[in-house]
Amino acid sequence: MQVSERRSVGKTGLEVTALGMGTAAMGGLYAPVSAEASLAALEAAWAAGIRHFDSAPMYGLGRSEHLLGHFLREKAEAATVSTKVGRLMARERPGRPLPPAPPKNPLDSGWHNGLPFREIFDYSYDGIMRSFDDSGQRTGLEKLDLLFVHDIGTVTHGEAQATHWSALTRGGGFRALDELRTAGLIAGFGLGVNEAAIVLDAMNEATLDCTLLAGRHTLLEQQALPLLEKAREAGMSIMIGGVFNSGILAAGPTGHRKFNYQDVPEDIARRVGALSAACERFGVPLAAAAIQYPLRNPAVTTVLIGPRDAEQVRQNVAWFEQDVPAELWEALQRDGLIA
Image (cartoon, rainbow, N blue to C red; front, top):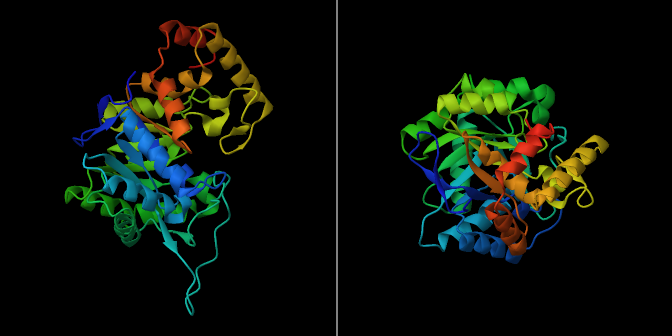
């Protein structure tokens, strides 16, 4: 499998590389990351042939988009870029206090060196349009290729989900995205979420071109298989993020102890141990199997990695391009470790 392999995105006419780079780490996910390290990671990704990059206003409260835009503006060759809508960045001003902050959702670990803003959820027509304009200004790029509606779902919003869903549907959020696509300002749109079920709901409301699904189609989780089948039938591409489930599949059973942004439950640790032992029998690092597994499904266009520095980029690329024998996948399925 080659990093630079070009793959089509739904019916948009876009082509993206089989391996892409997410930029949450550049916002200070889990720990501070310097601008120098972030730019070096981007340069290493570029040198390896990666030409698709994903960001979001949420990542470092604007920091990730600033750094990514700075990097890509210096490149003569084009790359494809996706970012997200649904969150606006704001700060307190005299006489204009911000609304109360919503309860913190379990998948938000915070930002260690983010910019001095606070996120305000807004999935309405005006909110989507403003988010698109703000991201264009932060990145300074001529074009943003794909927009993903970010974290719409009950895991993020809890009791407020119905209000935000209404803004996206009856309030014109999807209509704004459709207008941007029709005008040629973006090539396509979809959802950027950690929940598979909400994508199925959204497919009943709008024609989605591509969806970014994090953590739900990995060696540890295959609960999104019905969604992937429906996406394939509908011609909607799927990008898969979170292939290491917050790190546990990269480090193995004795290393990094995070699973889906939280401490690793014992049953997951045992399953990681079984996966690791099976991979060892075939001389394949667990991480190599994890990064390649999602692309075995024909609905999946791209796998996104989220490295913190240049060395992590180079290691991810090596895992992605390592030969994985078909016999390993057969063994994992036979042992009930993958669907």
